[in-house]
Picture 1: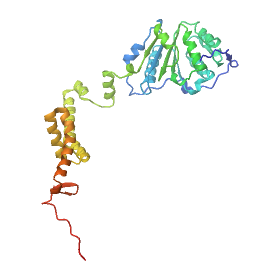
Picture 2: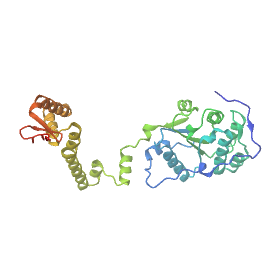
Picture 3: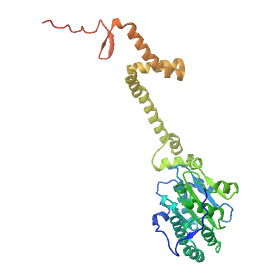
Length: 331
């Protein structure tokens, strides 16, 4: 459903109260891996046709970290970056555009651009017309590029606020760049912009760590795998290899048989010999079916020879060695 109602502007100079935390680029910790591979892909020529970059992936994929790193990279290069972290309250166009106006006005290098943005009043009801047109026109007096980062766009539901953002994407000024982060594809014009070559996207598969990034992350937390240790020194690789061999032997010869023995009521040594025999005879499949067969044979053996066996403490023993059952005392 499209909202194309007439724009009703707020009184001149009126703005919603915007928490400063919404306009701050998230701080990066020391242990964060620098995503150079993706940052290079996001680096767009300021005079190029790509004006929108979307980062779409599930929660915890590193979207905000990547956009924060890109924002820091742009800031170091002298490019103005306006950051807005969206939330449910931004479904109100007045609240949404109060934050966007404040963020873009305070980082705009050109004085006329900043003055024009500060003079705009957020719309009470957003549409595709007057307010977005005035916002776009404010950037036409400068040739300097400005980046607007909108994080968590998935929190904006279909309605007037989202329609106003779609109108901005349809009428992008030449020197405005927008970075969008969301957990799922927002109902904007991103597919059309991608087809026209005016947008680029990064998704979950691109956000996954490659080999170098994984090794860097593990090394920062002092976790060494065999392959990583081998790249450092032969001695470290030998230490890791010895540890894994010892661990496997303890698990296979001690821990595993005891766990399986408690599950199928067999002795640990019986479990070990059954798996060893099954693996030798039948390979991988033989090792898998060895325990069920051994447990079944135990039941059959006890059933066939039940007259010759006695059960003591849950174990079958020959009746010849079993202690006699206590006789009832006669009064």
